[in-house]
Image (cartoon, rainbow, N blue to C red):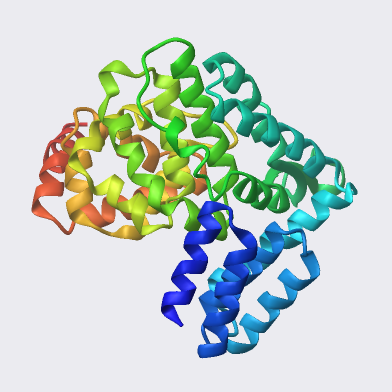
Length: 343
């Protein structure tokens, strides 16, 4: 069964969809509980535009293994693909056109400026507006608008880029100019696509290490591109792959360089990164970051911020640092206490 299942996957990669369906069927005859064979059968059927049969194959897979993440993610993609085909969702229809042109440009090696102009249109399509309550008495109705992820649009980007494989080659250090603008646009697009979308985060996991050389090249990279890389790292902050990047001493300087700039925007970079660091409670990672010149002042500043979303995690972070002699020394706690006594 495994042999037939693996051959089905190989044939899917080669575009031999009818043959892949046959191999998946053969695998299921030998092992009716082989979940991956159901998924590969569904992919082969979907590629042949047999939408109903593909969805039925996924339902069969869930009967064998209820709650299987791979199956649920595939179901999510097919639901969104059906919406896009229906033409009822304007955003998905626009995304379909943009991503089709983007795929063609990337494959025929279009110019950096052509690809960049398309990528810059995507983040706004991946966000929507939602209301949230506010305590501000000056706001009528007690509700304000805030930007929120458009989940269906995010899933469609994952589907149309083959699990971000189409965008991954663009996520590498590039010389300043048009190509660096391309890198920044690609980072912003992926950050918008994975924000608060667990299935997209899981799909992008294997590409997170590509952020390391970008952050390491601090001296040769503009602040805007570094900010985009840190925004993507923060969006992936709950994943172990992103936390390994934060722990890497070689990326500490680039990360702290971005955090050292005060950020008053509504979607602060600092919030996601500091919340992830506080949740990690790893004194080794903190020691690496605090070794960067100016890092202690950045964390003390955020701990005294008026923004509750960042000052709470920052204070928790400093509390964690207090448990390590190395972190206490790098925070400059003794010097700060002396200054307070003198005052």
